[in-house]
Image (cartoon, rainbow, N blue to C red; front, side, top):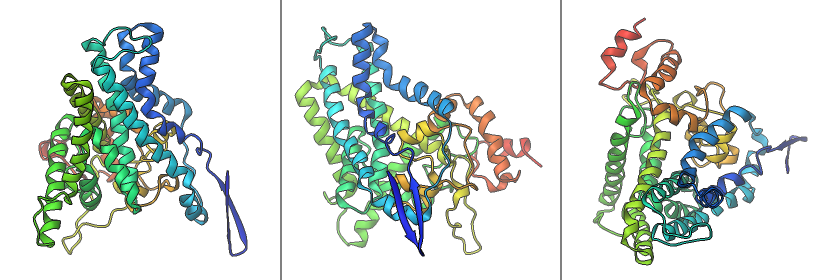
Length: 394
């Protein structure tokens, strides 16, 4: 489908070559069903681990094989591109499919059987299925991220529904009103610091984000001169979605599914926060004479145009444009040549982060080079500041 716009008598035409690839993102909730299919074909317990295999093996390989797409839509067609409702329905379709997939998975975790699954799943198979559900949950948080930035009210409620699976509804508040204000500063719990491992980052961001979301809502209600202990508190009403969902699943399929619900939620949160870790790793906005931080610009976010992960995560890797234009829809996000570029897509970078020595060997020099060797400009982890100063001293 070609989009046309006429500007000062000149016709501008542009075609989104990824238009029908975006549907792949909407069928991600079927990944656990794919695990069932593989198990039915092979009889192997390992098949239930297809979700992590898909995210951390298949997608990085696709990134390497298919390559990158750095094409930007012309400014003249951006408004028409954003108004194309096809792209919205792609994200809308994800949410009911996500919920349906979770109910299907909970049925199996509760001892249900299906063709090819003649007996209730054993513990190893249930762990694999929970991890596969967790991969969907993590990508569901990203879908919530896309929808939660929009001004249309029903899209924001869709975002809450997508977050219910992980019990991470407070992300909706912290990301929009916390992270986007403090991004690439030492005060931001969702910005990775130079020298900080992903294993150190996880507790800092999970606890810090929760505290930030609660504090943001508490201050909002203080301005309204009313108690924040209210269903109108967006942290509480987001968690209410999770209580209803998890409670309904437990009633339907038994309390035995609860440990696996927790496991899939942890896996989903870990996937999300792994992405947060790398998106701004080492980047720091500088303080102005006024004491405020400079405005966010493309140099404060790591970007990637690898097609595989971009299709999976709705152009999240064009992260600089997202921070510059938070309400812009994913199909219209642009690549900035001045933004720092990751060596591969987010999925592959997450795998590298598991081994801190490999991560540092790949990323730390890139951060230092980005700041032309001036370590004082980077967001450095306090634990490593002195050691890095000696290592990278000019």
